[in-house]
Image (tube, helix red, strand yellow):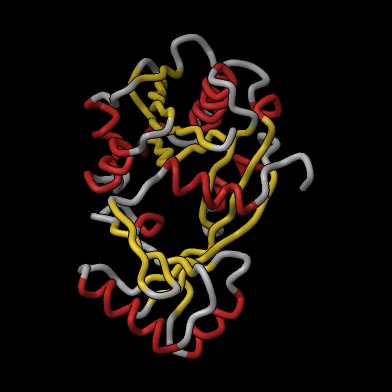
Length: 241
């Protein structure tokens, strides 16, 4: 889409706003050290075509790193995708990348005292994330991100109820780790946090609001579509079980 960042730009935004602990070349692949930060910071990506032997070498190195043999398949990786399928790697977590101009989402601010920006995150935010399975490994990703960043704390019924992390790179603000506590879901707080992220991004000169979510997350996909965000691209992982 001409008026939105390209999928290649968003791949770079992911790397900048949700960075691996370390990365290094292994033949035609870039390997990432995730340290418990999730698939995005643990997956290998291809820099050029690879032979089956080079795939095996990369997989063995990942095993030596005590990580699964996990490859990120982007839109230019069709050949690698087919190779991995033949080698017995299965698809994991098909993902959708969304984007919208900031002004599309930053249309009206959340109600007073509903969402606050804060860095570093407060203890109550860490508790909300922990309840949603977002543990120390992912919090470490937020800490080591060197981009302009913040977190958002959302409140419902005058109680801490949701949180997210946002970073800016390449003119794009990207939302990560949006989590709403179980008792507070389906009350509109996720939309309030997303709009608050857009206003924060606008205040910090970003042009676009972006994010990544799995295809299986029906509620999230419905929310972001309702806010005017558009699909920019996709990726998925291949993993050796």
